[in-house]
Image 1 (cartoon, helix red, strand yellow):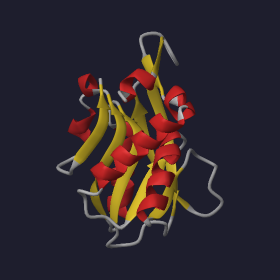
Image 2 (tube, rainbow, N blue to C red):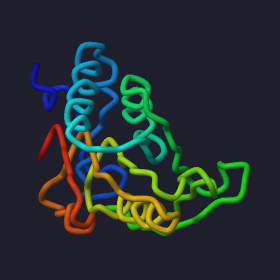
Image 3 (cartoon, rainbow, N blue to C red):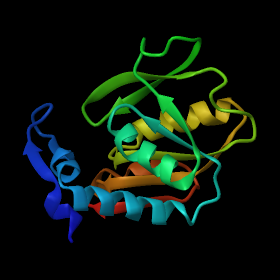
Image 4 (cartoon, one colour):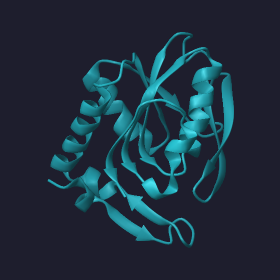
Length: 170
């Protein structure tokens, strides 16, 4: 099955000029969803890590099943005001603006080898902000795994010298 055929493209969303890659159509298809997670697990198996970290919201959709299947811990990165305890906050750039991300203090332990997982690598802003949070806690970035990569936006350039794996590339 060609997973790229399962992704709906919506033009001019959320702002004019953006070609949004909508994974809800892939998620709706049980075989495509299963294949996507299996391919992401296969890509992650080449990286030495002990915990998966994923950003809200679609990162949760791919990161949680990976962590479960691989018997790894799972760390949530959320938008501001969604976590109940003391947090670390970082600003990040989107393809179409800026926002903030938060993580609980103490969620990442010093020495952890963190695999950063998300549905999409675009400009790299989200992952770069998450990388800074990981490093600020004394942990290591083991690598990155994405379902989709928009290669023309060159997001890899913001990630540093770490393994980067993507399943579907535009």
